[in-house]
Length: 305
Ligand code: CP
Image (cartoon, rainbow, N blue to C red; front, top):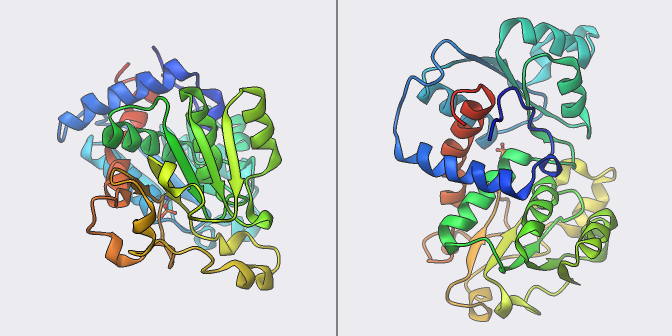
């Protein structure tokens, strides 16, 4: 399978076989430590929104493969401030780098960047839309912790309306005969465009606002924060903040084997007391960002197949 020069914009662009192939390569890459696979290659990280994990793990992944990194972590220090368009910013960046990772608040911005660029573009998150590299590390984490992807019962709790990691992961997991439980108040439920797609694909799903209603069924609980920055009205955010909390009392209502995931950052939705339990998979999940992003860089730059 050849991913050379391919953009990674939306998880919808990947077939099941392609996702499985990527996960297989991640496993191989994870077994090696440092290598000179990407020596002489330059990654540009264009982050128009805050990030800790995505930006730093891409930088670390590139450097561990002996590549170099340029970029910015806020648009304030770029010529966007002088009125330069995103299109022109990308046309410039492609002169300086072999591959671009972009995070931007506008849905569709990564697709636009890919149209502008002659070098490959990776979407590091575009508004509430997609976060495909997070999804691949989420899949990898599920496969590692559960030893399979097929037939799992997966709950998503929190802000399912604005949470882009949920949107990407639901589409990816729909290839693997899942049962989904969407746990959110009506105003933050998963958008209908996703449930329509699940209906078409005959994927079983349930919606509820009650955290414990289906909790004993779950193999995985994917927790998300309420996405404060996406609310048009701050008062709406105030209504929902702190609405769900995963704590020791909640663990009375789950299977012993339940794994709790979270793309992070967390605010207050997972109590720190959970961190050292067998259920917590979220730090391991974040750590998986390194082998996954190494793999994606190496695949797209044509250094592995
Ligand atoms: N999970 C994730 O995207 O984290 P950052 O926003 O810190 O990159």
